[in-house]
Length: 207
Image 1 (cartoon, rainbow, N blue to C red):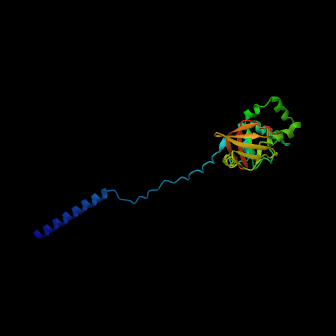
Image 2: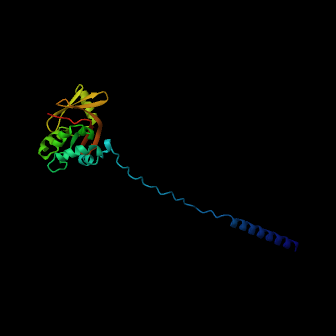
Image 3: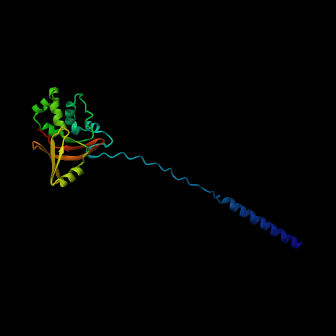
């Protein structure tokens, strides 16, 4: 009998301990496999194509760039006045323009400017504007290299057949025509899809 009671006590104690253990386990948080979702990677927006000198957009044509710039208001007005259609013509492509600033045009005698803009003087105006243009895309680096190669000067023929000459004056590049009118390149390398524009401070006056 004492043996049976002793066995019963052992069994009872074992059951009590198991129950406590089960209760303690139930109070513990159940581990779950958490899959952390990585934040969605946002694709960077394509960077806008940077503008080049004078705010030119290399994806746009010379005409589109010139017409959108206040600094070339008088030049584009003259170019349109020189063209029969009153618009910039298709011949203004694949060229480099040495473009007088508004201030350069304003420095001309008002009577001369007004006379040039008359319809009957369209050929003369076209001659003047074309004498500021050369064939091909020519940036400042090429002009500088050609000046060195030429021993200090670089000559180019304009699309009108007149000559312009380049030389260095310190850090500046000077342009002169066949009448020895000189202009300084103020800002170089306005790049368009079909040419370059270099801003100059004087209107050249070819023969």
